[in-house]
Length: 442
Image 1: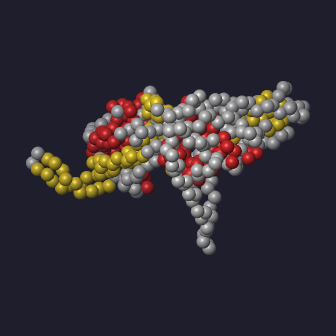
Image 2 (image 1 turned 120 degrees about the vertical axis):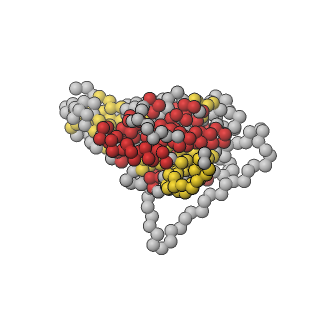
């Protein structure tokens, strides 16, 4: 049997690379068709790569810890007789990053041929004078943040062979000073250079303090949150909604719903229905930003933040949520939440979101100020539903009554969503929930 190259498979529209976390087979091991041979990790989920055919793993082309591009060879499989490894193939040139991948990094377009008015540097080449390789993701971040090749070369990389990783460059950015390695000022720059940002003083643990190393997912979450705050100017609008009718309706139908559909009826699918309806009426919150271009998304794909047993967070996505009724949304919500907690989500199920909702009420919180899930431009947090005294307006006069109230928090990217749109949107979601008909069928 001839040698077969195993390529890193495509793992979703926005996933361009993965980290090799653990080899499950070593050279000389027999493998069965579809048997996992290596564990990989993306910035979305962990996964495994199976053998396409039965045979013997003859060669590993990458090491644990290496970051590999989609479509790049990672191993070879041959017959039991093929014990001599084939010569190692030269590395496949990394494909140019797609627009979606560029948007996902920092909301900017791929490297342009001319310098943008914002003062970005020229495109960073794939390799530096030292011969060090820079991935497309690192190059995109460097270009959008004005990091020169000289600065890149000065960053101590923690990847294989000293390669600079996404974490390395994101960790470097807050510590940049106006040194000789900084990008030169343009002709239109003011004469006085801004004062360098002082680096944070190193923390010295006190006696008895416990040092806990972040796991891989927590590091990715940390990097993503910092990147989101750096990319989008966040504004948050709040609305308090009277959801008494919705609460009474759910109490009335939840047993019948579970008996008929075999699914529990939570508030989350109802919240998603209201958000989808508001997006249809105000589609400019369902957009992405590419430089100075606004991408108005055709699909309405709702991400739902889910807490994992480890304490980390993941955001599975309900694709084409506008095409599902209440029963379909309930099935999707329950299925994705259950598989998220069990660690069984596929990479494509956490990609492609256009708007996100997070239910902070699950933890007893009344409201929150959520961070935008890039490259989206808005996110809504739903707070805990509580009984509160409220003024009830009637034709006979105002009364004080006990009502079920909740807060909705809407964080949005002020580059493209102004306060009027962001405020109207969350108010519209509240109105839909408040006007819920007690006789709504399911």
